[in-house]
Amino acid sequence: MSQRDVTYDADDAYEYECLRCAETVRATGHPGGCPECASPMRNRRMPYE
Ligand SMILES: [Zn+2]
Image (cartoon, rainbow, N blue to C red; front, side, top):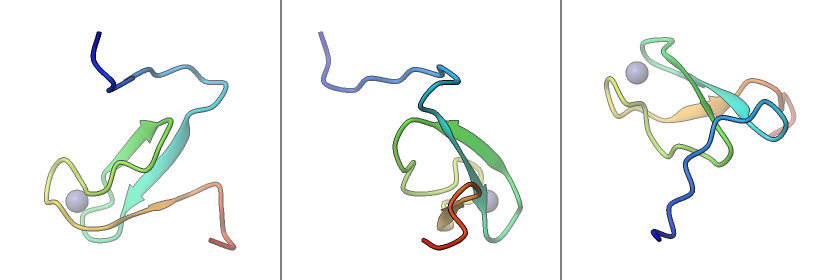
C-alpha cells in the first residue's frame, strides 16, 4: 500500500481555505497548495496558526 493516506473522515479532517481563490479542501494534513491555483492554503479551524 502507498504511504499516502487520503481519507476524508470528519473526525480528524480539517478544512483548508485558499488565500487566493477561496477554494476549500478537507484534508487530514496540510494539502500544501490549492488544487485549483496552487496558492498557499490556511486551516480555517486554527485562527492562531
Ligand atoms: Zn486557489
